Image (cartoon, rainbow, N blue to C red; front, side, top):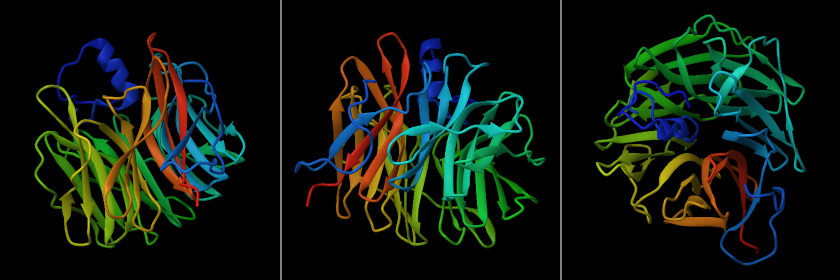
Length: 379
């Protein structure tokens, strides 16, 4: 990811890896496919996982995923990640049996890194990221193709980190001139975009309720930052003071239930996982069953269960999730991939399936997109 205003200097190799893995924050800072995602396999283990790939070109990585059903899932990312000027943004769709890349029309310069996707309906899917023309990249479409939108309120230097969409409303969040930034529009014309700048920092993730209210999360440069969107506009929310903390993603179940995930930088250079939960009145920090992990994405089933994707440094070659069952947090791991590091950048819950996407990195610093699918326990 092209994160600006980095927290600290980093060696070139670490910096380049962070551009894809997302471990360097703005304003702060595979194995061959075994089985395609689908119906749960037999067995009685708590979490059965299958490893597959969308088969992107060389050095491909998936950044985000959004699902409408087990046969209607969208993912975005990039190919040729090591070539900063020629990397190619990717939009791909899962129809229940295979992944198919979907083109963007009326676009002469092309997308670079696409880092977020949102699906309000089958005919209303949004993708955002970087354009090779120096402008933020915003595209809207469906299985028949996407169109890049020319939004005059966006300008060079703006950075977009996340998108959320519901029927008749879309929200983009990121940063502008070192301050948090959000842009909203209403359908069906999707014109008349309203933009607002907030406090210093950057926003990386955003989630909405069906009525278009929600939360955006990020960091101020030294601690977590959460903004709330209501009918009266954006407002900074009170959060627990966590020095060195940041938030990467948020899942909004309802006005009274939401979960935000991220981490805390330690002086040792390690990252402590951070999960904050909203109960309708306040944000509180969750106690987790793991001391070190990098958390990237979060999703839920709408009924009190949540899943968080990320990276477990103690088991780098194994797909990793945190799972809140409704009463407690627990860790889940997939199969081990020899000689590879597995980072799951985002996760979605569709039906009885939890699908996480990201990339693997081998000993030769070659990337490959990865999709890890966890099925429900057999009944």
